[in-house]
Length: 171
Image (tube, rainbow, N blue to C red; front, side):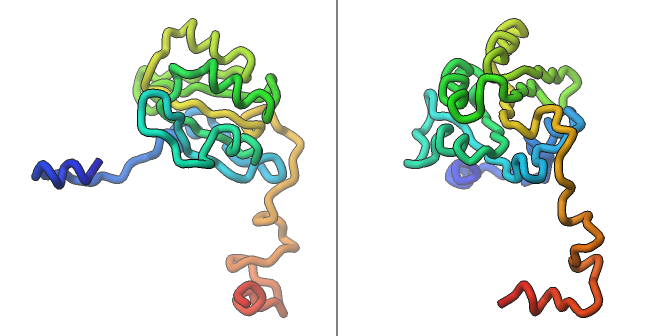
């Protein structure tokens, strides 16, 4: 959309900000990735009345990975999201709708794929919301710690005598 400002000769300033998915994670007070549960986050949207999605970039394809999905501009399409994602994640997969996240009137609606749509409807949310879906959003308590924190595993901030990380990882 910067391109349109250029075309119309409109001056603008780019100000770094916090993306909605990160603001939602902060508001929820939880990680969006968990080792051996979900290690990726997919930022996407659905093509309701907007530009079509590129071939292969479908909710179903993204869901097959098991990643945490952050779905923008789709709160009016909750029924379709539930229909497409349930076979991949299961009806009890955790889901959150973050309405106006980062604003004083933000709302965080927690549920699962089989009930989040009705919860969103009850709150009368029809726009300005981010949908998060994935197993990492659940109450996962028993999971393997990241290797980053394993004292037996070397990394650049915790070298181990005799291990040259530059040589070992740059073949």
